[in-house]
Length: 329
Image (tube, rainbow, N blue to C red):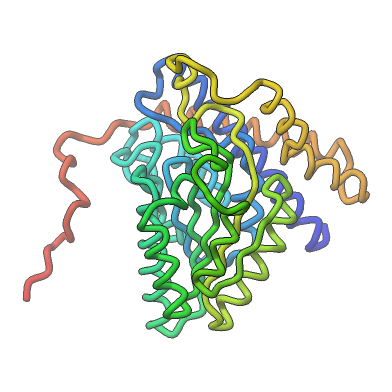
C-alpha cells in the first residue's frame, strides 16, 4: 500500500470507528448502561480525523464536551475510551473522568472539559510552554460555535496572536449551540472572519470533507511550526443527533427541521470520503467493506473489554489529585 493510500484508508477507518463508537454510546445511554450526559460526534467525524491526520504524535490537542472523536482521531485506544465512559479503572482517566474528560498525555491528548471554551486557554498555555522549550510541536484546540462567543475564546486568541504561539484554533461550527443557531448569535457571516481582529489567518473549511480538513490543517501546522503564529480554522459541519443524548425527548418545540437534517445527511463525511476513494481508484468497495468489518470487531472488543473491567476501588478515590509523593521545598 503506497503512503497516500495508507493515509486515506486510515482516515476512513478512524471516521468509521468514531461513528460506530458513538452509535453504541447512544444505545448504552438509552438502555441506562451508560449513566450521565453524553454528547455524540455523529456527523462531524471528518473534522477531527482530517485535522489530526496533519499532526505528529507529539503534537497536542484539547477538546470539549463533544470530544469522543478527538482522542480517537489522535490515536487513542478505543478500549480505554469505552472503559472511561463506563467508569472503569482501565479507562483513560481510570474511570474518574467519564465522557467529557478523556486524556492521554502520552499521545498529546491534554484533555477535555464540559465548561464551554475552557480548553482554549489550556491550549495557549501548552503552546507557550512548547515555545519556551524550543520545540516545534503545535497545539490544536477544538471548540464549537457556541464557545466562539465566550470571553475565554477571545482572550486565548488575542494572547496567542500577540506572542505568535504555535496554536491552531479549530472551530467546529455544527450550526447550533444546544438549540441556538449560530446565525442568531454571531454578527459576522463566518466565525473565521473574526480572525482579522487578531491579525491571524481565518480559513473557512468544508467540515464534511476529511481531505479538505487535512489540507487546511496541514497549512496551519506548517505556519505554526515556522514560528508565524496561530490560525483560526472554521469547519462547517453538522451534528445529526441532539446536543446530548435524550435531549430531544424533553424539548417543547423543535429548533430545526427534519428537512435540514436530511440535507446534511446527503453530505455525510464517511460517504464523501468513500466515494472519493472508489471514484479515484484508490480503493475498491471490497476494501471499504473490509475496513467496516474490522471496525465492527474493534468496537465489540472494546465493549467486552470495558464491561469486563473493574470499577475503581473506593480507596483510590483521591488518587491522582496530588503529586505522589508531594514535592517538598
